[in-house]
Image (cartoon, helix red, strand yellow):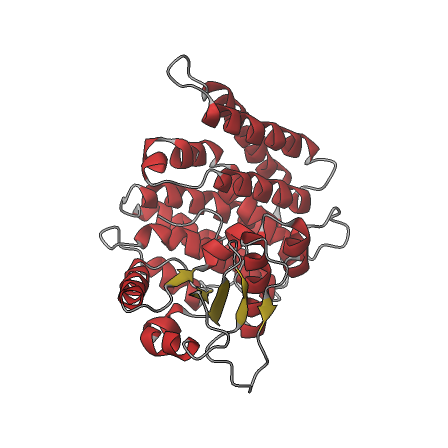
Length: 362
């Protein structure tokens, strides 16, 4: 199952930036202000990029890798480098900007079990979703790395950033009830989903509303989102044997989704296509989590919307490859719509595409 907050923030392309984000996230997770980045490029580091006390005060070491493939290619050798760290570590973690990978998780579990059995420190791993989950708990740290989520005005917002926000507004904002069921329903409880993920989603929708719609026009949506977040956690803690506590938050979620849906009628040009891409990705995401086939009609609409958004006669190769990789019979395919959403955001954020207001009418 994909981490619901992982596609909210695009992973960095620079190893130094990723290391800095990981440092911030783990300071938050472990409440460890003394956590420190270790040395600099070119120095011998014993395989440790970040070190310091964990939440129990024990010395932890972290090695950061942008790609999970760098870890799976030689996890044992990489960990053994940290055996020489001084003073001796009590635990060691990999951190990667890649999505959660079950095969790599198993590899790390087995490696850790083997090491503990021989009296050496255990090993764990943080994926991008885990890092984001911690980073969003501290607004100051989040804004340091992702200031675009902390703006209060759309006056100077780059059009590509607004389009990015419109994609995510539709992607998350039209799925509030879906996420309530996914996180708090029977399957979510069995999978021990972190209920705080829902707060991540409501904050994402609120931030995207602020950027895409504006502080004034988006105030109603943001106000309702704050109430929804409160009602969802009241329902989560309520006694379901005496009454159905979920009716009120579900009704409010439907109301907010209607407000978000109405945003489409205020849009034109590439902004309209950005919103439609988010709508179509959300529909696909619901299907993927049920391990369903990708309907051909939905695929055609999504590809047409992506071409219109990027104003090209083809979809960017990286996005097209991710779409083509979807196979409902393959473990992990449910995360493909999330990955496509993240790639669309990345292209909008980093590529300079000249707008064409008349394209939506074509």
